[in-house]
Length: 239
Image (cartoon, rainbow, N blue to C red; front, top):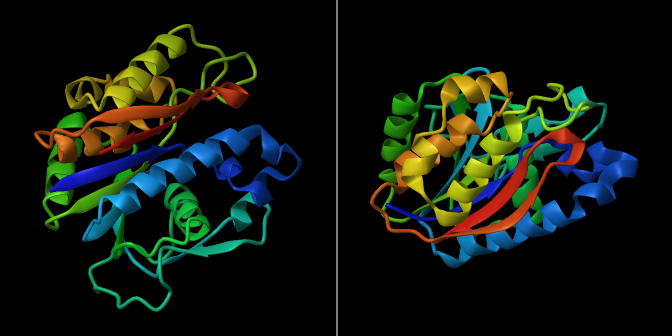
């Protein structure tokens, strides 16, 4: 059963070494992520599931390595303990970018509260399948916590990665309300087609969370909301 969740943005720029001279611009987001992870640790989970979007879905064992070399930085990370026993069921041997950011956040927080499993969600996975995956993950241990990584629209300004789209602000506002209120129905109702057009990579992971949290009765708090670089970033804690 899902007992807690932390929602964090997934840009590699969250990592100071990647952001370099712009690192301070996301300092408040990093602080909020640390606060959200503290909520997870306090929930006394049996398992932490780290969920992020990727081109293809798949599972990643604790101890799977990741790297930010593709972003011009010689920085490696590991999902949890590098010495953790592998299940042999993982489908990937190198973390996608979203899960690498999650691994970095957990390393920064010195996570030791529970074993870790990583799940990449295909960014075009349709909502019903996201909900089914979430339900499976939420039932994977007696007390499950989730770290969910994903961004809102990338079309908030003229200089945004997806240029300016007038629909982006309303989409992000709806997502922020749902994440802050732990409103699983509202998250499940996010339009997958519109999310794709707005380059909102968080849609699928958020809908996995909605499936995991359905019926769990969790309350939410929105800890951070901003759109630096024209991309919607949110941090929320559910418990």
